Length: 266
Image (cartoon, rainbow, N blue to C red; front, side, top):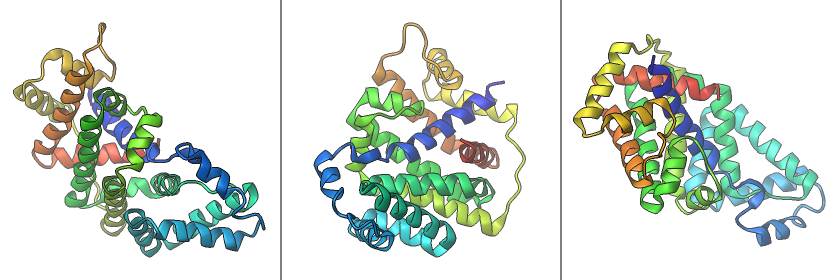
C-alpha cells in the first residue's frame, strides 16, 4: 500500500519546514551569540523575557505569528516564552529569533497539531499552498537542497536560506496555526483516504509527465540506484505538490488532513 508513503512524504516536508527554520544555538552568527552571553548576566528571568519579546517584536514577519499565538493559545504562548526566558537566564545565551519561531511552531504542532486535520478545507489547503511556496523558493536557490528538503532533511544551508526568507517561513507557520484554530472551532471528522484516491493521484502524476522512476522515487521515499539528478528530482517533487492541489474533493482534503495528523505525531 503506497498511501502511507505519500502521507509520510507530505509530513516529512512539513516537519522539515518547521524544524529547519530554527538556527539552533545561533549557529549563523557566533558573534551575536557571544554578545548575548553577557546580556542577561543578572540571571533575571523577567529581564530575559523582556529581551526575547523585544527581539521578536523587532522582527515583524515573526511578530505576527507570536501575536496570533498569544491571541488564540494564550497558555501555550506564555509557556513557550517563559521557557525561552528561563533558559536564557540560566545559560546567558540568547537564541536567534529564527530558533524562537521554529521552537514555538514545534511546540504548538506537538500539543495541538492534530486539530489541523479537523479544520475547514480552505485553511487546510492554505497550509500546503504555503508549503509549496517554500519548496519552490528552495528549488530556485539550490536543487540539491531542494531534494534533501523534500525528504525531510535540513542542514546549515537550509537554515541560512530560511533566515533570509522570513516572510514565506512565517506565512507557512501562520497557515499551520490558522488550520489548528479552525480545527479547534469546527472539529470536522473525516474518513481516511482510500487506495482509489491514491490511484487518482498516480494517474494525475503520469498525466503531468512524470515517469515510473520519478513516481516510484516520490512514493517509495527513496532514490533509485543510480539516483536521479537533483534538478529532475526537485522538479518531480514540485509537480507532486502541484498535482495534490488538483485532486477532487473530498479526496484532497482527506489526504491533506491525514498528513497533518501524522505531522502532529512526529
